[in-house]
Image (cartoon, one colour):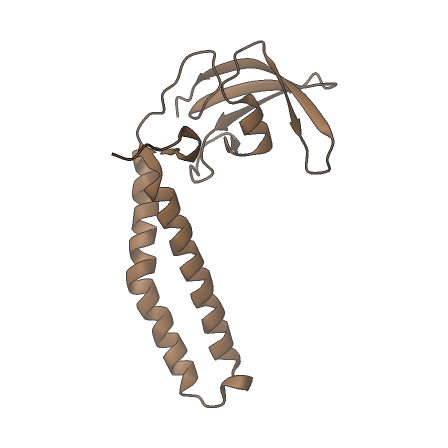
Length: 165
């Protein structure tokens, strides 16, 4: 049996897994057939150097193939069901409330895969700089992470509870 590192695991609800699997099945089956037909139809129009339809179809094909690879990677490392969660400890599947240093405003979000669309609150990935910094921290802890502009930001964890949907 192969060991999978915890940071490679993407926790998904059954609904999200089914949605992604359905998208993969469509893209790798009928989606590929449809784009191949578009390419063939454009190819029959003649000179490929000046054929906008052909180039657009080839670009679309590249996007489809990229998405197929992305979905395969997500589903290959997916664990379906509830992520292991401990009340008061930040981890995937938790609703987290933090304050940013120098700002009294509280921010609440779901720490989960970005593939978990449809949540009524903002979703932050555990692999994002903020998500990685707070993952495993407890209520009352502070964490510092690097912003895209190179500056550091510190947050304090105020609450971490399992997401109720």
